[in-house]
Amino acid sequence: MNKPKWNKDYKAPSSWDEMFFGSSNGVGILPTPNSGFRTLHPEIDSEACIKCMMCWIFCPEGCIDKSGEHLEVDMDYCKGCGICATECPKECIKMVKDGDSE
Amino acid sequence: MSKKAFLSANEAAAYGVKLSKPHVVSAYPITPQTTLVEKIADFLANGEADFKYMMVESEHSAMASALGASLMGARTFTASSSQGLLYMCEMLSYVSGSRNPIVMVDANRSIATPWNIFGDQRDAMAMRDSGWIMLFVESGQEALDTVIQAYKIAEDPEVMTPVMVNIDGFTLTHTYDMVEIPEQEEVDSFLPPYNTTNKMDMKNPKTLCQSVGPDFHTEGRYLQQKAFEAAKRKIVSVNDEYAKLTGRSYGGLIEEYRCDDAEVVLVATGSVAGTVRAVVDEMREAGKKVGLIKLRSFRPFPKEYFESVKDKFKAIGVIDKSISFGYDGTVFSEVKSAMYGSSAKMANYIVGLGGRDIPKKMLEDMYNKLFGMVSGKNEAEVQFLGMRWE
Image 1 (cartoon, one colour):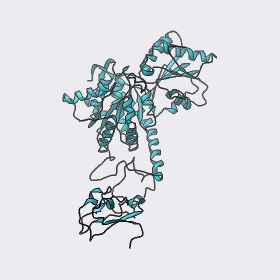
Image 2 (image 1 turned 120 degrees about the vertical axis):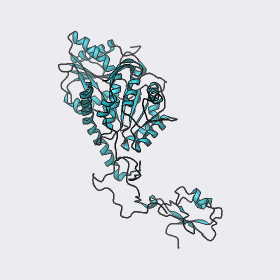
Image 3 (image 1 turned 180 degrees about the vertical axis):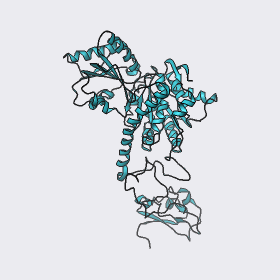
Image 4 (image 1 turned 90 degrees about the vertical axis):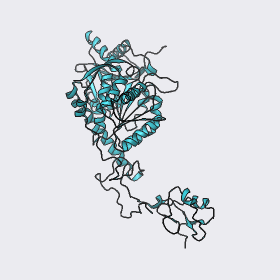
């Protein structure tokens, strides 16, 4: 997906010279994936999915990736709200506790 | 050659804005600010100026859109008053925290309720901690000159802090006087175009108005405080530079008037300083050693100046057109704390609320009360003067 990846090499300012000005900072920085929010994540059953794109429309983070053959979720940005699962007319998205998937 | 014109302070400030060549002006009208933004619209309609004029649906949007334009590197102006300023309040700290050098005029007016369109300084004083530089002017001429100076102060790389130029509602905004309008070339030589790296730039993109947690928040606020220290120096040097250009000086942070051998002084902010001058002259004629300290910069507050004069005068009175309910007049509490340990008698006079007139007699009474305190008379520290009933 065309979003900045989790930058594990990101270094926070370590001196006054490196301190950001006002409330502006660089771009392409994702110091914490999904802001540490998520407890559940969506899993899409690609066999049952009809690509109606309801999840893509409703996802508040815009993190449903439609560029590949199957829809995928960018887990660096998904906060696990479950709106995609609620809106899916085929009920082929289930919310799984993080760490519990196969 | 500059030319002279008969202008209200609102119109004079509008000339200051025009001469500063902003890229964007956003505004929502409110009495007594309206004639200022109308005059700016006239300049645009007549083809005398070239900028984008954004008519917005509220004061909150006026400041929000000014911030948006400033974040793109534009020189930006807006103006408001009273309830409008209070409605803008949330955006004021957005602008100061993101270090965007917007200049605004506040046409000082009382705040509701009860509803009142007339002048006092309660609106501005309620915004004391918004992170804006706050300058108060005494005349239409000073309004024009201070708007131009404000851009130079705000946009200084060490300062990068927005400036609120305060003009007393009606007493100044709607009162006409002869005002000298500098030539555009003169102002251009004084105020270079705004050039900053603190902006959205497609070649060097930025996250704007990001969130910052406990880990870096203090450092950012410390830098804002440092910017205000730089502003203290800058307000003085900009005033001096402007004085060389035009011959008009306002003293920088404060102006002392006949204070050298004064025993008793009044501290005044805004238009009332003009009336105090006249009273000082009259009382000096009568041999009374009185003086005026005109406070031009409320934020940054000239703490060092007040420290330096803490044992210079026998008594100091502070005129406030605002009151911090439950404590003192807003300016008085600042003066008092800056003069901590002073041997001078101090008193606070709350006057001019909701546009009530401050006649010369009332100011003379203040000086006489202060002389009374010097000779041992006890007076309440904070007094509302000119009330209908004892």
